[in-house]
Image (cartoon, rainbow, N blue to C red; front, side, top):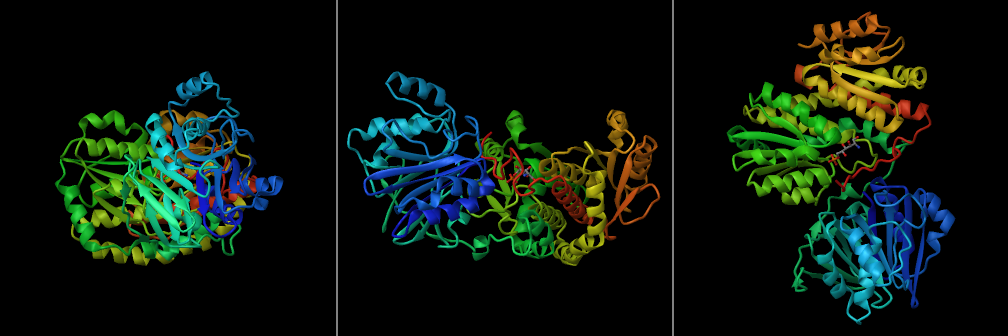
Length: 591
Ligand code: AGP
């Protein structure tokens, strides 16, 4: 959460930084600001509000200078106010800091610094960094030396950039457990939480290790380890698809990402069969297998669990990443941990993987973003290959995750090729299901937009799709929604069904059909409005969302797509911005 960007070079920095912030907005969008060094002055402009509003209100584009840092915020410490927006400064106004992460000991540091006479102007944890730098810079040391000297005092996770009038013409950056990547286009340098921010300028990147420091000045770049010794880094090439960041013909990224899923599936299937076979063998040989993830990625993992069991006859458990640490006692050398994360930087997943590695478990990660923290920590990495996903709500990455689990489970029985061809056959179905149902979904969104609660039911492998459908709805339309195994309905939730309550029943004509339909009838008898997601029509459904008939284990992939579109249209009917839901951010880099 929060996106940071720095530019140091020969061009005017403000325009570059504003463009980069637009690409980072998925990381947070409650406040924004930039700081620029120019002619012996440090200029800072910032405010609460979405980037576009702040750019206009504060005239961000007018800031001169070619050493510039910027920030887009997702509030953790301190309310959404102008004072709490980044960049933050010290007492003298000679230092600018932008930060992503949490300084856990900020209260102690704040007390100490206040005791020493420092005056704080915000409620953020970040501001302590600026004041710590201020004290050390007084001694005339280089900014990078000062950064190196203060970071041992910071507890928590961070990636931050600092610029100062006392050592002008440079940006210094460092990180611990939060991402930071440098873009090289000498004499111009970029540094950001995500290479997407500067990918229109360069695809040459260098990543920082934890506790490393980078110094950028026009035409010069230097990396230092935690002891201040120079380190040599490799330049990596970023795939050109990661520069793409346009909505195209669509009004929202979410709609674009839903619509492009047929192509995405085609890209996801492009995997190295040998790697899959090797990983499948490790999974089969392990004493135990644990999959860990959060949010939608966890629901994909739950589908994966059924696939591992049904196809590979391999039982495994799925542990919510935020709870993983509490099970760490039973993780050992014989454990394979599969970590699933679109961003590859979700703090809970990273933390869980750290614990797993400490226990000598083997870590396999399934990620989308290249150069992510999670990928760097893993023994094997499987990439989703679905390109940048910008909307906060996961859609195409979820479908790709399902495809990866499908391929992996078939690799366990030496049938990777067979699985890949089934998935190729499925690409067109994901488009067909949208064409079939678009008008009915629009009609439903108008009819049901004032409903206060939705329930989603399914059984077996489709149960996680009920949860995913409910998650999509609540995160972008703010309607309360719950997904559950259909059989659980009568163990409590049935009490909440009233005349007209929408109940979405995922009811494919597979081994779950009859029992799921019985549960739908139970809900209908209490007045529920039944939306049946099925390839088989039934008069139990008040609305029928038709899905194609596919192989039993592929139903989750065709059932989830119309549920994504239903959530999208409901958000639109209710006047919500589906790309930027309130209180959320796409990358959850705090625990
Ligand atoms: C999904 O729509 C959500 N935005 C969220 O639950 C997300 O899946 C979760 O934060 C995990 O993210 P990750 O896949 O990047 O780890």
